[in-house]
Structures are given as structure tokens and as C-alpha cells.
Image (cartoon, rainbow, N blue to C red; front, side):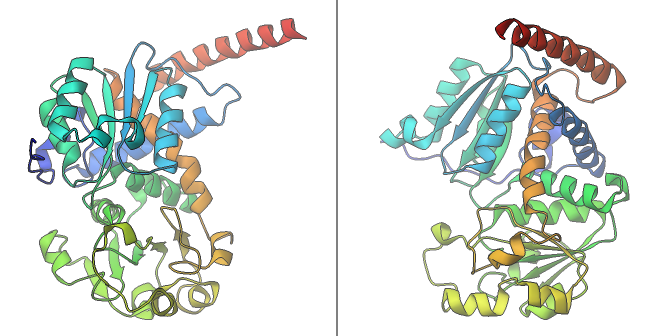
Amino acid sequence: MNAEPQLELNTHHENAHGKHLLGIQGLTREELCGMVADAATFVEVSDRSIKKVPALRGKTILNVFLEPSTRTRVSFEIAGKRLSADTINLTASGSSAQKGENLMDTARTLQAMAPDVVVIRHWASGAAKFLAEKLRYTSIVNAGDGMNEHPTQALLDLLTIQRHFGKSINELSGLSVAIVGDVRHSRVARSAVWSHLLLGNKVRLVGPPTLVPEYLVHEECFGSRVMICSDLQEGIEGADVVMALRMQKERQNQAFIGSLDEYSKMFGLSRQKLDRFCPGAVVLHPGPANRGIEINGELMYEQRSLIEEQVRYGVAVRMSVLFRLGSRDHRLGDDWERRNASDGAADEQNTSSVAGGAK
């Protein structure tokens, strides 16, 4: 049996020239802001009555999800279809990985199929980088690899925060951001930290020492703008943004907390705790949420909760990323908007004609 190849974490050069999106680490501030700004354009596209544009007509996008997912998988599928790409979905239950195929064999199979873009979610950290090295003519989008990164989640979080505060992405600096929970096992947390550091925000990682160990700051080279807090009040007091992380029970092979009840009492977010320590903060959660553990169900639907906005903007962000990687035009501009506005108007007129004829 072939051994699974050793996978390394992505490096700075892997995101270069707009061919891949493997992580936030390694992006420049300009690249990060450009992606978020482009995504704002696709929010407007998603608000149209006719949401489909011909931007990637004739392109093939392969969504390979070898770990369970609902929000990310479905939003990538919708994004590809709204861009008029041929979108094919492959999950763990329907893949040869269930039969023992390793990542090298998967890469060779994908190379032979020659898709334009592969969106990959994988249990192994570094899987996206590995595919990027093996698939010469295909762009790779990391939809979450092990405990490494989840870059499109960070992008949609920034878009959500930016639109809430009513600032341009370039003005979104100087915020105090608290990330609460299982940072140790969270790819979302790593991408979030890198994104906020690029923008000039201060980050506090909050949780018990077993889930937010001191070595993380040094190992990940986060620097002095990241502070670790083992007390919830210290961690979220005065914060502008508070993100609750899901307890990653599937990635834990030992007990990192005494009990879920104990964790909830000490670090679970509730209306009362936010009212007391950071009444002006907005609340994020990447989902799916363990209600009553890392966040109170009541808090999820308050006005300060932006969780539903995160889901909504996920489609726009993934449209932006797929457009950048799947087309030769890596920047959205007036020409693109005019071209697709006219195409959208034509599609809307054609749809109206068909609907009228069906009456």
C-alpha cells in the first residue's frame, strides 16, 4: 500500500501571481483588500433578480470535499453556478478516498481531468499546497485543510465586519478582535489572525491554556499584536469584534477541558457576558455552532450577531475567488461590471419572455 505523502504547510510563495488561494498567510495587504473589495461587487450581483453571470462560461470547477461540510460546500457550488461554470461536486462518500486512494493518486486523477479550478477540503494540513504543486495547469482553492487554514472564511468574515462598520476594507484597521475557544485545533482561527494582522488590528486569543497554548503565538510567528488570555473578561473586555469558535471534538484525541459544562460557564458567550464586558461588540461564529457550549442560542439571533450575514456573504466571497482564479481578468473593473450588467439585463429579458410564453 502506498504511504500517504508527507504534507507541509503552505509558504509565502504559494499564493503568488493569483494562481492559487492556499491561505491568508503569505498574502500581501493589497491582495487581501483587493479580494474583499471584489467580493463586495459580487454582493450586488447576488442581490439582482437574475443572479447568474457568464463570467466563467466554459470553465470547469471541481469541488472536492473529503471532510463534512454544509456552508462552505454549498456556497462554493452556488458560486460556481452563478458564474456559469460547469460545477462538479465530489464528497468523501462518493470518492475513491473511501477505498484507500491516497492524495498522490487523487492528484494524478485530477491532473488527467484538467479542471480549471479545484476547490479542496481535506483532513490533512497542507493538502491544498500539495495539490497546487502537483496540478500544473489547475488553480487550487483551499476550502479548509486540517488545522492549517480556511482562507475564504477569513475573507467573508472581513467582508461582514467591513459592511457592518460601513468602512472601506482599507480603512478597517485599529479594531480590537477577540477570538474565543478552541484555537489550538482551528484553521478558522489561524486564517482570521493572519487577516487581522495584515489590516493592522489587534487580536486576543481567549480560552483555557490547553486550547490556547502560549507556544502558538511563537510557532505561528504572530508577533506582539496577538495576546493570549485565559480569562474571558480580560479577553473580550472592550472588544469591537468577538468570534466564538466551535469546539473541535473530532480533532481531539485527548481531554483538553474538564467538561463541556465547565467550559461553557468559563468561556461560553452569552448576552449577559457581552453586556457586561463589551456591550458595543459584534458577534461572529463560523458555524456550525454548539449551542449552549461556545455560544448561547439566544445571542445568535440578537442584532449584534452577524452570523446570518456571514453565511450570506460567503457566496459573494467565493464568487470573487473563483472569478479571480478561473478567468484571465484578475481585477474587477468598470468594463467587467458593464459587460455583465448588460448580459444580466439580456438574461433577465429572455427569462421574462420565457415566463410570459408559459402563462
